[in-house]
Length: 315
Image (cartoon, rainbow, N blue to C red; front, side, top):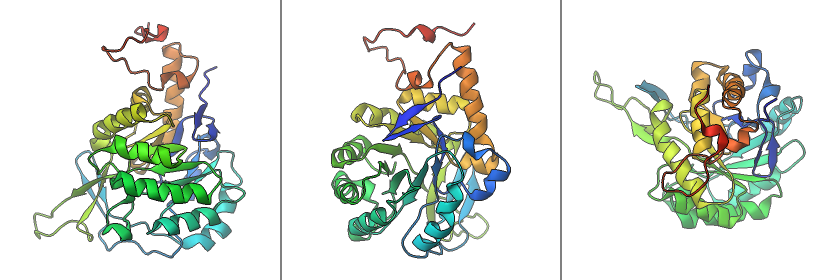
């Protein structure tokens, strides 16, 4: 038997695979066994009702999607009355993604959602911060530290902080989140991108710019996970372009304790359970007893770390 369990930011997960926020919905229970997932991560909840950005919201490009959904939300009452009871019937812990325009609003929302049935808060601080001229909190270390301190004071639940890849020094931002009390980091969100319609000469998205996700961003985010995992002591959750078991293993070798799957679910709804099955086969083939042994096991030729016995090529 392979031990797939991992410890992530205050929670013990049965396996390291979970959905990325905004890419998972209740209807997927018709195509997969929800109880097989390591955790649930909800669509981002905001206090107010949000319709989202103007259409068109999604455009496909080689290697991925550019989206400008705009975090549509049905608000807190709907989440408490409908979403929370729905997930209560399943075993995996429920991680609630939240977004707010100010640090104080983030704290208030986290406090209100700290209740039975919620296992952790995932703070999406890669959303626009209206107090910083539309920039995301996570673009700078100072604003990251401020909002995370507000959040940490507002909730006793494990606090996962979702960072943006659209910053010049992500390890510095990661350290600021850790210093302020984050229990885990999600690295990362989508990469700012744009597409133009060659027939109309207009931007393809109603909001002009959007976020690129999918396989095209994996090498970039993989590098960021590697850097952040070396910069902090808290767990890092890899998120970006994961669609196969090999992708998940690569992220874990780079230092991720767990992974989130997003765009791949749109292409193949059962991707997450396929990856979980693949992790078992990968570990069996390499004689790895615990999947957690993969975390940060990338071989650095300049390192003096002893070679792990299971690094020999499979027979």
